[in-house]
Structure formats: structure tokens, C-alpha cells
Length: 237
Image (cartoon, rainbow, N blue to C red; front, side, top):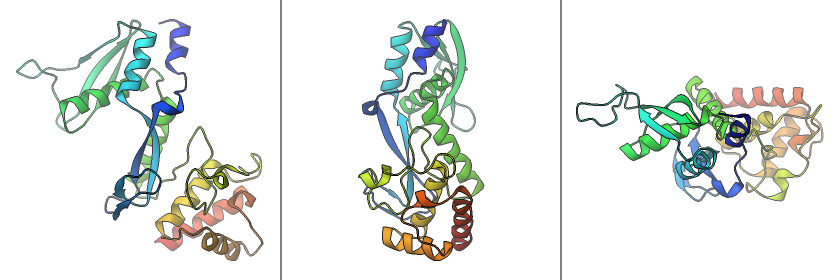
């Protein structure tokens, strides 16, 4: 694999190729119609960006039309074998380089697609999107409320009425002293988890806690955002 191929594998995907995968904060979250993605799933939930099997395959073909994959093991029928947990382990070879990946799913098709996506990530394909999903998974395993904070775009300001509105991206905060994208996302998630979804109610709570005028979460300092997160976590216990 040459430098140009390695770079091409890591190129960002266009918005049209990126889907939204809802990840409820708790396994027992009540299911409802989602205003953000339109799906019916546990809420509140983070919505993680992801690239599907088709887009991943297209990227691999663009870099190396002869790419291949093979299972690490076969069963007694000569079919790809799963491990004891139902995972499919594969070797993915792109431009002469082989790396291992793993996938799961409810069918062989899903396992293969997931394993190829996972192995392609080892080459840098959609790595930034996978990083978000890994961070969410780690928070879930620790039993804490995950922060839906994108790595490639700032999270929505606190109390924004509907994701994707101009209010959410205006005033991203001072990059030196203002709250980080992770802090903004975590504050948003914690308020959602407590059922405080109205912007005015959220901002009233922030003002009462800080005891000073605040128009947006972007007006906070990093230290204030950290204190507010600790306050919300304590209230959620």
C-alpha cells in the first residue's frame, strides 16, 4: 500500500453517505417516536454518525478493486465460523496489507458487513465516526450517561429545541476558555435524561446554579461547565 492509497482510505465521507444510529443511554429507556431521526427507539438517546456496508465497500473498491476478505476459521460445513459469543472474525486485505476485524449481527449477512466495516476501520475508513461510537460504548459499560459529542462538529448548545436548528450551531463558544464540545454534549444529554427538554427551563436551571446571567451554554467557562456536569450527575443519582 502506498501513501496515496492510505490517504484515500482515510478521506472523510460526504454527508449523504453518513447515517444516524440511535444509541439509548439506558437499556431500559422507554421507547418513543424520535424527533431527531424519526425512528421508534429508547429515549433519550445519542445519535451516532456511521457509514454503512455499501459506502465502506465503495471506498475499498475505489482504493483497491481487488480487495478481499476471508474468515479466520471455517465450520464443519466450510462456512465462516463464529466464536463462542457469536462474533465473526475476518482478515481484510487491501492493497497487499491484511488486517483483522470482527463483527456481529442477527444474520450471516449482518455479521459479514459489520466485520468488513470494523476491519476497514483498521485502515482508517471512517475512523472518526468509529471513535465516537467507542466513546459511547465505554460510557455505557461504566454505567454513566454518555455524551453525544461529535468529533468533527460541535455538539448542540444546551436547551436547543430541535436538533439541527440554527440555534444549535450559532455561537460555538470561545475555543480557549469556553466549554468543549464534549462538555456541551454531556450537559445536553444529562438534561435530556432528567426530562428537562424545554430550553427556557434548562437555562433557568443553569442561571440558578451559577447565580449569574447566562444566555447559552457557550457563555460558560470550562470550569463552570465541569461544575454544572457534576451538579447534574449528582441530581441524576
